Amino acid sequence: MSSIRDQVELVVASGKGGVGKSTLTAVLAVELARRGFRLVAADADAEAPNLHIALGVSEWESVEPYYEGRIAFIRRDKCTDCGICAEVCPYGAVELRDGHYYINEWICEGCLTCSLACPVKAIRYKFRVQAGEIRVATTRYGFKLVSGEIRPGRPNSGKLVTEVKNKAKSLLGGGGLVLVDAAAGIECQVISSLTGAQLALLVAEPTAASLSDLKRIHKLTKHFMAAPMLVINKYDLNEEYASTIEEYARENNIPVIGRIPYDDSVPKSIVSKTPLNEAYPDSPAAKAMVEISDYIAEEVLPNWRRWWAKYRPKKPEPYIPILP
Ligand code: SF4
Ligand code: SF4
Image (cartoon, rainbow, N blue to C red; front, top):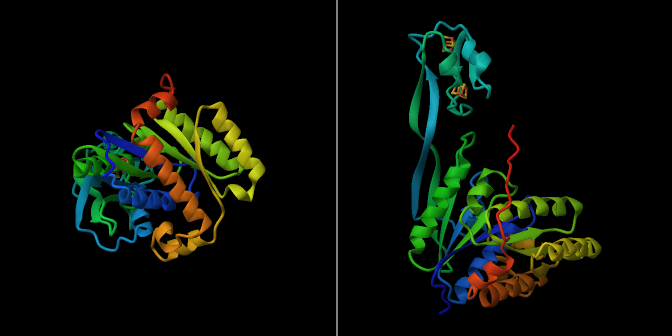
């Protein structure tokens, strides 16, 4: 049995979606569990969770409601239908129906603006609104999966991701691996995924857009002091550009730990709801992903502190989010 004495978080992330992140995470989880690592997988893409599909999970053993925030509503007995709240609401959540104003609770962000503006104090709030769910399953490979799903229109998916990770850590208990499948991009869900993580497995494709996204997600890992490593998916679609991405990695002290070829078996495995290494073990992409898992199992996790010290940034990079 392989073991890690500490609790280590490894986040699989990419600056954009559709680069094979969940397929790789599923293979990695299955292979590491096979090699005896204690682990819990966490699906941190709360707006579009799909790791359970990649792992063939069809039933949840627990589903807990996730509560957050507040939603405004209008007291009809006080409202004079002046319309001021509709004018000031920054989210367009106040609607006029049959001559009366109502708040659309799917859109309301609970920002308080309308209640501050209402001249007759007709706006009240509902608290502890159910905004999503946190689900747990035991996969057929023996490890647990925690998956969060935010309800459409609810904000704070980043907070839900934090809860998902906390649940995964408590299920893991002692030492072992929390393997996080992050959402695409660099928004709040990804920020929550990377907070506190020691290792980040970045996935890129050989395109100019993917390199630009890689630079953005790499900047975020630097802010959170996570040690990055890189995998290039579908590298053979443009080997010249794959070299350009590798050059960026070399210049920025990011080890390239794998190259995955384009492979028709990947979409077929997604359709069959089975990890690629189980559905098509002899396919070139499955073999490449198993090699990546071997590398992480043998070179990264047993000596994760040394790895972290070697590849983490020497100081955190300031991160300035772009506000709307
Ligand atoms: S501002 Fe107050 S009184 Fe005016 S429409 Fe809105 S809730 Fe009613
Ligand atoms: S609380 Fe904010 S988002 Fe909700 S209706 Fe009022 S102004 Fe709009």
